Image 1: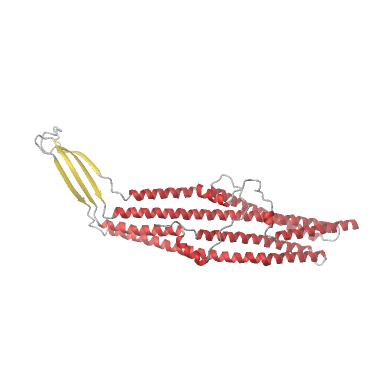
Image 2: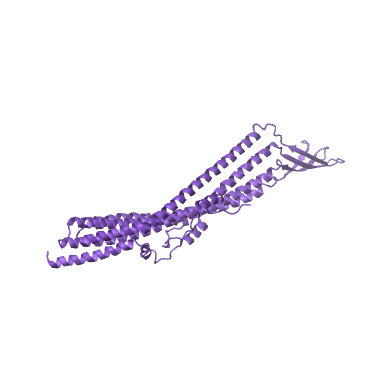
Length: 436
């Protein structure tokens, strides 16, 4: 091997050392990802705040719940009203031989009016029950709106992570390509081995699978965002990590759970079911129907007639009807109470687990920024210096360089998981409107 070739290989090697050193330093800096060119920068990007507004405005499920609330509020007015009165018109005692109305007495045309009065207190209780059900539907709407925002934030954060991870791995792939070229140059100058060339090529080519996987995840996340926003095509999202509100303490979060809309909806359903017991008890009282009628007699000299009466229902077999209705209503009320208790326990457990995860991820992110990434970078620099002095192999350089990449990706995962935990705690501490 000539001195020219050996000199050329050394020059390329020195350029490669400088390039991968700069690359490893970039991978360790949090600001690196803000400097990476975004494929969406040329398009009008959608912010998370705007996306949340679109989701709350256009989601068909929320629209259906809005109409359900309107339905229940109209029903609350309707069920509290008396039943429609009945009008009766007829002919009485008409002779069949002539169908004459003045052939004999008692042949008359009559008109009557009757009104049914349900059991005492039943209408008011049914109106109150429907009003509580309407309030439960309103709380359900608020809760599902918060759930939709949480679902959107999850997909949004996953998409941001995937985009940043793709950029990070692509940057590493460029460094690995330079490693391959440097290994080839050293091999051609008789300063390196073919095994080192093959290891460098393997390290570079394996990153292609990681990029493909991350790009598929990003496509899936964007498709989910489009579905949530009811858009025909995936949107171009703003490449900016959202500033979510800092979560409260665990004690504050647990105290605010009672105002969580979904829990308030379950509580309102319990109250409505308990009112159903009172409605069922009104069945022990009779319904009253009052009627009045007027008859026009056409027989000469006969007076006209007035009739009035009261009709009562007779709940004389309560064991087969009223008792069963009350027992069924009580069972429904207990069922609603158990559902509320179960949901309260589930939300409490979710809040505790999410808060613990938030604290753990926060500590892991700080530890990675302060210790792990700097240590990995220093280990890489030391290995690279040892390789430059002939005291280490290229495989060691590639391994420590890969460790820097792994910690950079791990830091991204911690950042994503921290934001996801904050979004979930924000959902759990969402407050509904004050009930009257």
